[in-house]
Length: 440
Image (cartoon, rainbow, N blue to C red; front, side, top):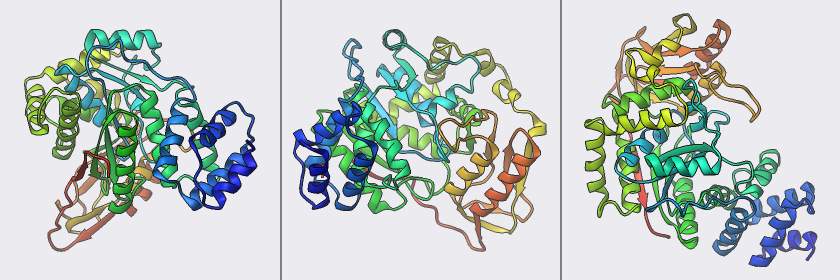
């Protein structure tokens, strides 16, 4: 085979065979296909698309292009949860302990944040001492002992995806449905879980900003999962405003702890119960998702989920004394670092644009512009109101945390663009928009 012939074939809108797609992936990973030819192929896919069969061949080839986790030594059905990325999304910090407390093995590999969306690894590492650098042996041992472990993704997991994504980022081919779906699902399949629950975000702060595009992506990923022999369920959830009341690494850990203690914000608890119920269902622990919600409420209310979180943090080297003591993690936030943002009109909050709030958090230092950028674990935003809430002009809407006044002022300037007001009461959007459980 010759790469130029395969580029031409896709450019002319013909389907590629499994062997042809595998040739492209295998030879690119071996660096026998240059970046300029792979870039041309990606652009051909961007404009011509791929058949469902081609997308599966691509996903499978990328999943098998590097390291693959073997979780078979862990008893039970292993269920992975993946979010397509949002603002204030700290659900993994809550879902992991909740479901592990009910006996579901949680063997999760996560990534770091990039741009306006946060990463679970960054959040957990804001807890002093917490380490996500676990060898495969230690990772598996933790799950066997306490039902939960979370580690950073191996550099060679689904290796082709990492190499191709770097090209997509600089060739304007990121927003291609076949490439998005295969990128996400190749990593999930290579991570070794038996079942996958997807939280597909919809709205201004999400990659998929319309219901139509989010549904298309969710249906494609559910089908890919089933084709790979994994039970796969997608929950489409709102991301037009941030999830919960905090954005930033340590701030989100604090809110996750509060939620595990039964004191978290309503929307965050609701989404965790929904996702967790489907995880328990996919794991065979309940017959119906509603039964799962009831069990999850119990472990939140009786303290079992919080206890499991402390056990999890301690097992990975984190300082649990800071979590358990009164004021705990909040004491790490210096008062001199914060600025308050005030309402500029009276009425009701009509809009809190998640993208702009995410960008404000980035300006404060809570996110990274590139993979190499440092982050400030203490930077972020505590929201005091949500869409639909009444507000008076001059009332505090948010508290911004940063290392210095310059960063705070930049964050204030950005967050101002996120808010819009209404003189009349505002109808809020549902948090859970759709559930997809079978291939389309």
